[in-house]
Length: 281
Ligand SMILES: C[S@@+](CC[C@H](N)C(=O)[O-])C[C@H]1O[C@@H](n2cnc3c(N)ncnc32)[C@H](O)[C@@H]1O
Image (cartoon, rainbow, N blue to C red):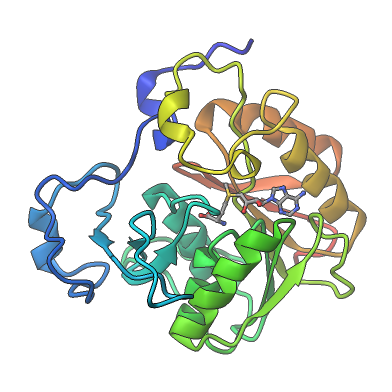
């Protein structure tokens, strides 16, 4: 088993990133935006705020009372989350930040924009979309982009569809094993694939039982799917690949990607931006 570096660099998957404590569950309406000052007073579990609001309604079947369904904030937007999908984590928002940086729309003033400077009408594919949080947020942030979201799970795609409808976001949803069914060349592939290694002894497996295994675990020290995706991207003319992984996995991913001809462009938190120098300039 690979030794992990430090607790600080460990993924918050090890513990729930949301909590009822101190949050107002009296309403299902969203009152905040990503940077709204009022949210700053609420409990912070990770690098960013996460706001969880309770719903006693099942959006798909409004008459059913389904306590397990939650509304979760991601990037200032409230998404429907069911037990069929991963609860979005705050660190995943950095995938959105990384794409905004590539198209010259840095999310914070003072952030050095990427030298890549892609146009905003890019084609983006989100692999392993789950609830659709990344794909839908990207469409909301970059309306000119053509966004396609894929997942291997029918149940996850159903949740993504509900969220697509909720936001009236014009994204394509497709069942696909990684990029298998993508028959065009995207400019950017983003992916928060399963990367938890079942042998990691620091993770709270009991807490993770509330989420689907298919969204969490991967073979080969958690890197099997990420490596497969790197292989697929490297074989095609895809300029950028943005991945989330535990920081303890980053060196292995960068080394693997290098062998396949991809370079590391940027690392921020859990998110790695890789580029294919053959096609990214
Ligand atoms: C860690 S979850 C990420 C969900 C969402 N993108 C997020 O960030 O909250 C990983 C997702 O990848 C999907 N997945 C697993 N294996 C896959 C594969 N071979 N091809 C496509 N999607 C896959 C799972 O069904 C799950 O929805």
